Image 1 (spheres, rainbow, N blue to C red):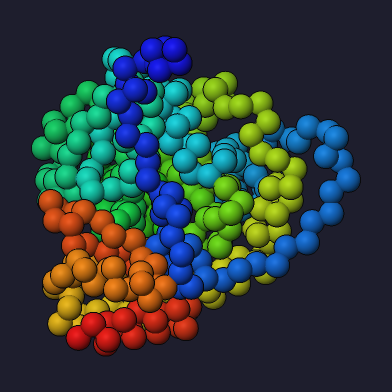
Image 2: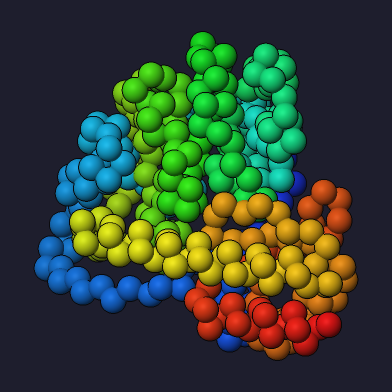
Length: 349
C-alpha cells in the first residue's frame, strides 16, 4: 500500500551512498574526509526544556567575524547538506526548474534535486575548467542554481575565484552561483566570500565538518546577501539548531580554537604532500589528481588492491570516475594512519 503512494521521482530515487553507509570493519579510517583530530568538549546545559534560538546569536556573530562578513549575511544550518536542500526548496519549482552541476562532484546535489523533482543539467569539470564564460553561460542555459564545489570533491580541483566572479556576472539576472566551500580552509585564498560585496547572486556553503573537525556535530552555514537569505529564512525549520550544537559550535569558533584549526590544517597539508609523493612513486598508482582538500584521489593499476587494504583494516573510499572503477580517494589522516597506507603500497608491490 505504502509504495503505491510514492511519487515517481521518489520511487526511482537512488539514495546518496555516504562513506558510513556500508557496515565496514577496520582500524584505520580514511574514507570519509574526516579530521583525525578529535576534540574534547565540555557542555553544561540546564535549559533544554526551552526551545533554542532559531539562529543562535553568539554563533552567528562568531562565524561572521571568522568569515569577515556581517551577521546578516550568515545563516546557520544542519550541515552544508541542509543549505543545499534549502536553496532548492526556496528557489526551484518542482517539475519545472533546473539546476546545473559539474561532474564528477559531490553526490548530494543530484540526490537533493531528484528528491524535489528538479531537473539536472549535468556538465563536466573539464567544461567548468576550460570553457570560456560566454560558452559556459550557454551550456548552463536556464538553470536557476549552479553548484560549484570548490575545492571539488572528489577530484580536489579548484575553480579560480575570478572565474566564479565572471560567471556570476554573466548569470546575475538568471541564476544563483552556489559555491560549496566545504574544504576551503585547505585553500583559503580561493574563497568566494569576497564576492558577496559585489554580487547578490553568489551563495557560499560552509561547514564545520572538515577542517574544524566536527563532522559529528552536523553544522554548516549559508553565506549570502539579503536577496538570498531573506526568502530562505521563510523556508528553514523554526528551530534548526539544537542548544547543545550551538554551544559546541560557539566554542569551536573562539579565537584560540580557530588558531588551533589553522595549525591542524597546516599539519594535514604537510601530511598530504608526503602521501602524494608516496603515491607518485608507487608502481601500483597510475594517476594522482591534484587534491586541494583534505584528501587525495588516485587511480590504481588494479582495483583488487583496494580489497587488500580493507582486509588489512585500512578503509579508503573506492570510486568509479571517468567511466573506470579503479579509483580511490584517501582522506588525509594522522602520520600514523598514513603510515598504514604506505605499508599497504609497499606490501602490494
